[in-house]
Amino acid sequence: MEVAILTLFIACFSASVYASYSTSIIYSKFNSISWYTETLDRNYTSVTIDIIPHLTFNQTETPAAKVAFMNETTTVKGIIVLFYKDNTEKVYLADGVTEVQIATGTWTAGNITRIVLGSQKVTITDHYGVEASEATILDGFSFDQEFANVRAKGATAFTATDGYMQVDVDAGTAGMSSSITEWMPTLIELMMLGMAIGLISKLGGKW
Image 1 (cartoon, one colour):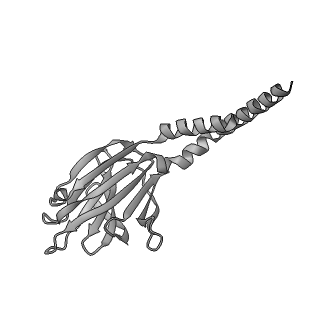
Image 2 (tube, rainbow, N blue to C red; image 1 turned 135 degrees about the vertical axis):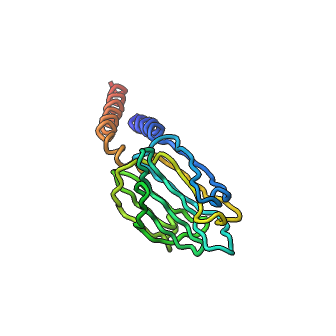
Image 3 (tube, rainbow, N blue to C red; image 1 turned 90 degrees about the horizontal axis):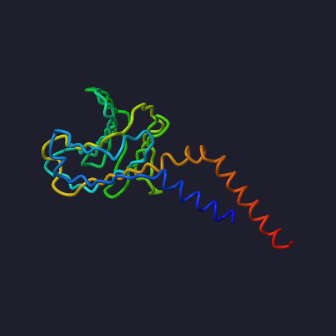
């Protein structure tokens, strides 16, 4: 009985915290020096974002593909990740018209660059899930804004010739730890209730 109650609770809990947004940004969007913007399904203060590069870069240029996550305030603030043709990667903090470099890393086609926003901090991990090369390039960087949209553009008008950037947004991953902590008293109460009902059922069967 207690197992059934716990399973039901977890299922309901997971459904309540999970939300996602996924997009494939085609290569042509990176052949412009103006931002292409998609509005996310909601404004996120706690979120995990995976960027998976599948771009074919222009071999006659030395371009960079830019992927950014911004707020919706009048003064734009956000995180910009630049993917260079030579597989180097740079991360910038955008604050209005000012952009300041805050991290450097590397990327590989098909590997995940993971961005986690939570508790007003940003952490970025390159090659996420690849044991031999996974590296945290930004750890707990202070960021007091939300992510409301994803943007893309190139450093030049000749950045890419084919492919796309996959962007997957998961509200459940980043917020799961804090949410479980908040719900823990209720979870314990439900487990105890299930145990009590199970015990009463057993005793009732003996009388």
